Each structure stands twice: as C-alpha cells, then as structure tokens.
Image 1 (cartoon, helix red, strand yellow):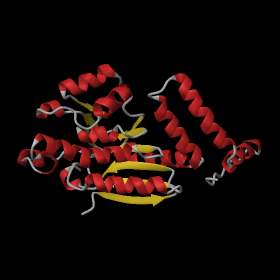
Image 2: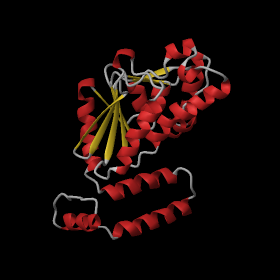
Image 3: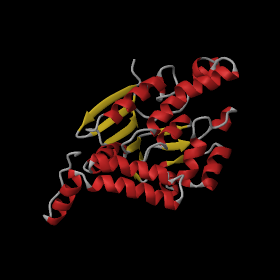
Length: 265
C-alpha cells in the first residue's frame, strides 16, 4: 500500500502521509523511494508551484516505527554499519527529497509531530498547525540521538536555546507554544487547517513559477554564504528574471491596477 496520497489541483500538490491507523510512522522500507519519486516528479513539473504536506487521521507523524525498533527490524536492524546505511538509503533519502523540493513546501501539521515526524514538519518553508498539534524531538527518551537532521533544522527555526531544551529534555510542546516560539506561523482549529493551507498555497501559487523557485533557492543559499555572495547570487538571478514575460506581466498588472496572470514564461 502506498504511503503517500498525492493530489494536484490549481498548481498545488498535496502530499498526505497515509498510515492513519498507526499514527503515520515513517521510515519503513520503501518510504525513501516513494518520497524521492514524488518530489522528483514535482520538481520536473513547472505547473506545480507549491506543495502541502500533511498527515491522514489524528497525527501528522508519530515518528519512527516503534515496533520495528523493538524487533530490531527494517531500518533499525542489523549491524551498526548496516543501520547507518539504512538511514542514509531510506530515512535520509526521504528527508533529502523534501528538502530538495524547488517549490515552497507548506507543512500543515494536523496532530502530533514527534521525533522523525517533527523533523519532517520542520522541512516546510512555511508551517501551520491545528490546535491539536504537538511537537517533540524525543530521541533521548528512547536512548537514541537525533538521527534525522533535526539538529540542523530546529535551531535555525527556534534558536539554539529552545532547540537544546527540547532535545535534552524530550519535552513535547503544544501548538500554542510552537506558535510563540516561531516553530509555526499560525494555529487554527482542526477543521480549518486544510482550508487555511490551501488558501496560503493559492497565494504562493499565484506567483511567477520561475521567480518563485529562484527566490526559494536564494533563501536557502542565504543561510550559508556571506552577504557579498548573497548579493552576487541575487544579481545573477535577477538578471534572468528581468527578461521573462512574467516580469512584464507583473509590471503591466501593477500599472493597470489588476491582478497579474503569470504563465511561467
């Protein structure tokens, strides 16, 4: 059975993690390949301008498969070198695929996002939550280290001190705290979450697709490079955008006081 339910409409692709009956655990065999295939297809489709990632049922994702940990099977079985390779080839393949999306990713966190689930949610460029959502990076409580990239993403989102508090205590925070800490940008009732996500995605998808992808890339590069390098990258990307039809459409729409209709040209 497929892990992901995939729907595309109005330039927006929605990916739903669909193991609702067991709280949407991740990291089973094939999960990395499925995410990689979905994200690769999105990257190659210029008609897609935004992605929403959410979970089916009551959870976003409760994290790694505890039963597989107990039985030391799947990604969590074998020798240390074998387990390392399982992380690289499956779990990390999934994470790299989501991180490598060239269009903005909205994490619509409908319920608990714990461990690997929290790390996946943090890969969203934008993150919104139901008031039923909870967030935790509870690896140490299981005698594990954070193995899914969260030590890189979470401090960049909420700062070193708060990230350290979550990692070293294993505490789980509610949606209101996540909003206060900047982990999410808005919290809504559960029944309004997907409508809110779709409305936000529609605003993103209304932007010119080439400029949108370049803007995401510039933000990513800006995390790691010097200010001078960021300016140089921006100058080169901007030169390309000035020659697009979408740029002229944006200028004309502003002058004519109407909404632009960007075509990706």
